[in-house]
Length: 98
Figure 1 (cartoon, rainbow, N blue to C red):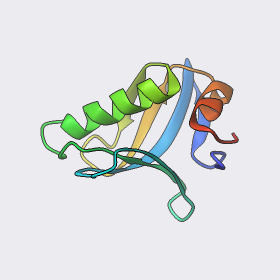
Figure 2 (figure 1 turned 180 degrees about the vertical axis):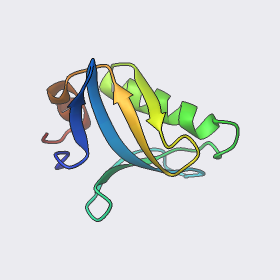
Figure 3 (figure 1 turned 45 degrees about the vertical axis):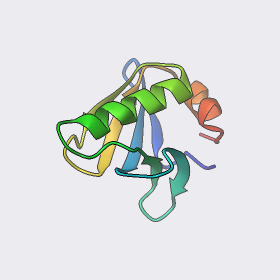
Figure 4 (figure 1 turned 90 degrees about the vertical axis):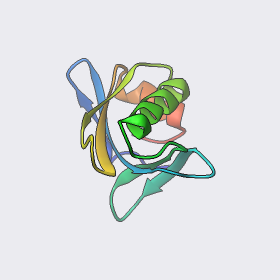
């Protein structure tokens, strides 16, 4: 998986561009959307009351092994998350190339 267009270094870690699909029957990380240049993250939670954002943070944190916080796009499907880990570690955890 080529993460080079959606993963970049930032202050104190990395930033990752994602697109979220709420109400999914199969939650998880589902590769990179080449057209949108974002990592596809599917969650079971509805996009109400911040529940989908919380599930995104928990899912990515458990996958990567570092703290994840939604920093932009709180009410939209396209979001930016901050990860408290270097780009190389994030890419390795997601099974991709940075």
